[in-house]
Length: 125
Ligand code: AMP
Image 1 (cartoon, rainbow, N blue to C red):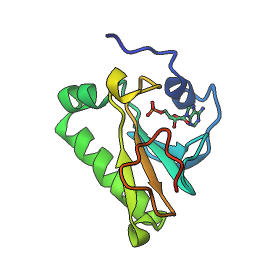
Image 2: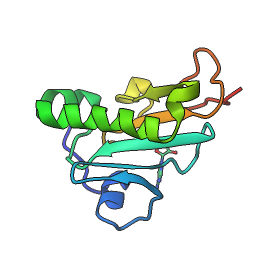
Image 3: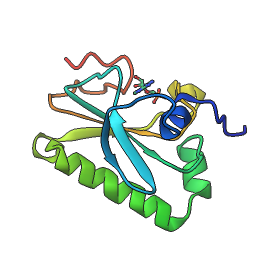
Image 4: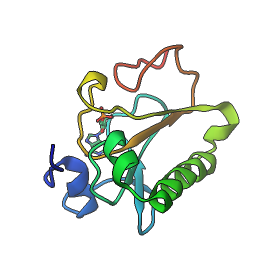
């Protein structure tokens, strides 16, 4: 499957659609999820064109991957999520119900997350 340049996160990266930026550098962007499932629900995306985790792991450079996950940890810490704990989720492909075909991770916290809850359909209870 080829990368779809018209996906919503590609449009956010091009500035065609607004987002609520939490962090940005030359390689990644973090912004608030438009439909938060928890009090803090941030999406972190690479600026490179990667469809999903499978694509990112296979085709991004080791430096890109290291930067992405190091920064994700820093962002979570900066938001205070490390104190109470948080969930990091990525939906990869159809079986996981991935909606946006640009690799992203969800950082979710700010409340106790129900055992076994996934990113989507989570009621936070
Ligand atoms: P998924 O692809 O299943 O991991 O989920 C995509 C996530 O993107 C969902 O949690 C949506 O609420 C979120 N989302 C979709 N459109 C936007 C947008 N324009 N700004 C911020 N978050 C969005």
